[in-house]
Length: 334
Image (cartoon, rainbow, N blue to C red; front, side, top):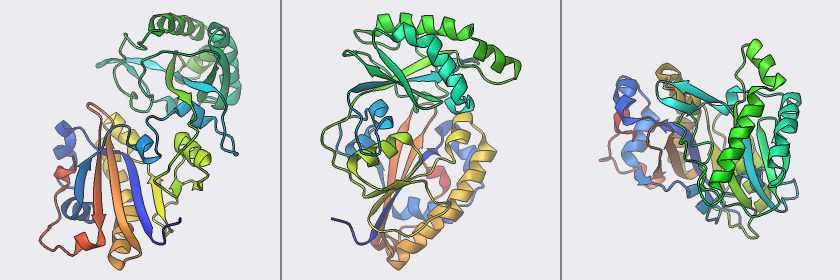
């Protein structure tokens, strides 16, 4: 049954900064709406799999969700096998942001043609986008793997993937790296000054659950996994509006403008993005809450570097009446 009033959840990857740089980044920054939320709201740590739980699942089969058709199905078991770039930095070997690759459809097709024979015994390649590759598995796969979104800019563990099939897959990935290194697509990209694809990242294995119990009635996001969740559950999903907009029901809005500067420790870009978030979303959402147009507001922030964390700040209209709860400085955004 559709909820009559809006209950808004804002998911903001990168809202939380590493503690060692937080104070220097925000000590002179003003964000009255966010300060009010910190002061009047209730802080609640969330588990890493909170999104799966919000849709009634025990985990997110990201590959299958990316393959969900408009009818809400994706038969079989799938594995994400995304093109990535490993880079050497002062932190060791880390995973570069895959969005920087900006592969064309022709480049992706040529690279897949080269590496597909290596994985033919395991499954068949396809793509949901030039930078998103999936393997439809022919047989069960026992891998211990890390999600790609939480691994970006993190050190690469040479022991992964683990699990029963881990050793065989580490060899497969090493063979794929050799093929990719010598591929004409990468040579052309290197000559053009573009980042090259030098490895693949397996993650998000599984098949679609038969039942799903969503905790939302609408989503505003360009994330393909969230889009797949909505398609499978039969919920409306669209790109986020440029700024807060009134709606009806329990709405999930994923806002990613802070993610890149948080991953790269770009303090100036992060501050600018936070000010835009404050102006376009937090302030109008807080105003709607005061007027009763929005019944509850939940701001979920994640920390993308060092130790990943997810924290929710919950606030209702009644919380705003508690005058003794004063706004808190942004140094308490943790």
